[in-house]
Image (cartoon, rainbow, N blue to C red; front, side, top):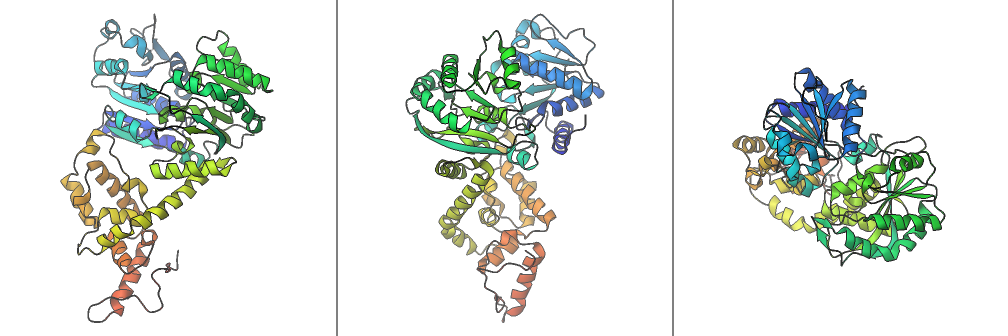
Length: 532
C-alpha cells in the first residue's frame, strides 16, 4: 500500500524521533487521515528490525480495526492479548492488546520488561489514565508512539506530561486544502440553549445536567433539522441513552427515518449497516460513535452533547469529514449555547489556535444565518483580529522601534510578519518549558533577534524554525524589517530579501552626511516592491 505524501512524512518523522533523543513521541492526524495506516507501516519497519510490537487501545472495535488495517497494509497478522486470549507463545511479532486486560498486575507479570520493543497507543489522549500508565511503565525501554486527532493546547500540555516530543502534525485545514478531507460548512441555529446551570465532572460538562438543560429544546431542534438535514445523512450526538432514544422518536414524528444505537443495543451492527445502506436518514447515539466507526457517506453532524474537550469535539465532527462519491461538504449544526464558561467547543475550535480569532469566527458564523465555510470564516476573523491587534499594539511597537538596540525585539518581528502562532506560543512538552540554551541564544543573535525576550526553549526552537524557513524562502531578515519599518514602510515582513536590500541601499546612497532618507517619489505607507 502506497502512503500519501503526508503519511510518508509522518512515518519518517516518528522513526527519526526514535533514532534521535525521543523515546516517547506523538503523532497528530485529523480523523479520516489514515492514522492506522501510518502506524501500521511504522510497525512493519520495526518488525523488520526484529522488534515485537504492541498496539494498545481501550475498546475492542479499535483493536479489531487496527488488526484489519495492519493486515491489509502490510500483510502482518496479529496475536491478541485480551480476555482469555494471550499473545505469549505466538510466533506473530505484533499483538493487539486491551488496556483493561493488560493493566492487571497478574497479567503484566507474565511479560519480561523487554518483551515489546515498540508500543503504539491508539487514541493517545487516554494515555494519562492509570491503566495505560501501568502498562507503559512495565515496558520502560520500549519505543512509544501515541496517535491522536488534533488536540488543543490544553490537551497537548497534558499529553506533554508523558510524551517527549510532537513528531508530526497534519492539520484539519491542510487536509481539506489537500483534498484528503471534505470542506466543512457550519451554521448556527438561532436557538439559545442555556447551559449556565450545567455542572462539571471529570473536566467536562456533566452529562446528566446537559440532558436536563437540553430536554425542553428537542422538538424545536428537530423542527430546525427539517430545514437543514432533509437531504443529508446525519449523525446526532446526545448526552444520555434515554435522550438519544427520545430524540429518535421526535425525529420520526418530524418525518425523518431515524435510528438509535447505544452500548446495549443487541442489533447495533445491523442498525449501522442499515444506516450505511441508506435505510435511515439520521442516526442518534449517546457518544458511542466517537471512535472506531467510519461511514464516509455522513455529510451532516449535529452535536447536542456540548463539550470542553477539543479532542472529543474533533472526534464527533470527524464522523463526517471523510470523502465519499457525490459528497460536496460536511454540514455542522451549531447552536447558541449560553454558558458562563468560555471553554465550550464550537466550530471555530476545529481550526483556531488563537482564542481571539476563534471568538471572532464564532461571531461571524452566528451572524451569517446560512452555512458558511469554516476556512473562509477563519480567514475573515483572522483579518479582523490582526487589524485590531495592530491598532492596539501600535504604541508598544513604536516604543520598540525607537530603542537604540542593534538586535530586533522578537515581538516586533512576530508582529511584522503577522505570526500569531509565535506571539501566542505556549510550551507543551517538558523540554520546551526550560530556558533557551546557549546554542539557541547564539543562533537567534546571528539572525538578528534579541534573545533576552525569549522565555522558553520551545519558543526559541519555534522562532529559529521560522527564521530558517524565511531564509530558505528568500524573505526579508529581522534587521531589514526593523530598518524599513523605522522609515514608515509597511508589510515589510512579506518582502523578498533582495527587494528589502535594494530599498535599504537606495536610502543609504540617497542621504547626505551619513543620514539615510527615503528616495524621492516613494511613499513608504503605500509602497509595494515591483515583483510582489
